[in-house]
Image 1 (cartoon, rainbow, N blue to C red):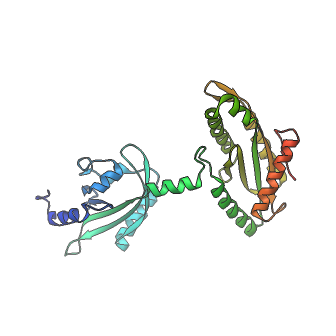
Image 2 (image 1 turned 30 degrees about the vertical axis):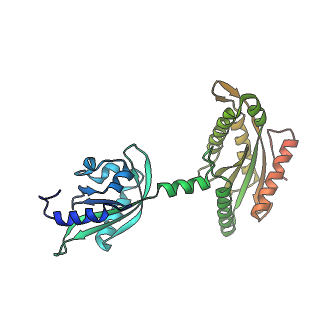
Image 3 (image 1 turned 90 degrees about the vertical axis):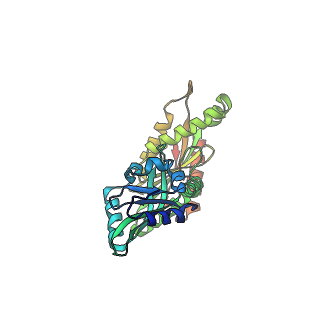
Length: 294
């Protein structure tokens, strides 16, 4: 297939070695032009071999990584003779996919680089499994499992630095009425919109999670006082009080919020959650659409 290429024998050997491999192979010349790829690589990227040969691998760049990322990659290849790590690529259909990639130079008997060989493993299935294990399937928010991990991390950070963190335990008011009167499909869409509004009400360093049903919880990191927590609780209530427009339905709900502060109310994770949960029920008994603290 490469009779005119000065290194056609080496190319044929590499092609033969990786023809049946589940690992994606990409071989480029010293100018990073693609010489050949195996079928596994084509399956991973969605591109045909005909389309890729002669192209620069840049056509698959995701845009996720900085220029410094690629500079460090090539420095490692030059100095260590190998780079390996995780990289995000863009498939033919535009989907971004995480890969495990190894790149090493192939040299001739004169110790001159003649090729660069890339070996790729598809991490998308593993990534999807990890994401599903940590995210709520409906809203995309962190689920209870990931929430507890982040809370544990926040508490450890607060202990080291002597700072405060807070929990806001949120239960939607009148959500059951929406489900009963409009149906579960509208109810599900409402939960997704609620999740979006909760994210818009907090900082990037805070966490909004869904515990299940119509219960949500927020971790506020490094708060200065209870006044900060009350301010966020008021903001969340304002966001949730605004009408939702879902499939020709105008939906109006509210929320009841209970909050707790570490280490003021507890130094224990489960106890801290329990305090916030109890406070939420106090808010329900106080007339709903308000916030309370034990």
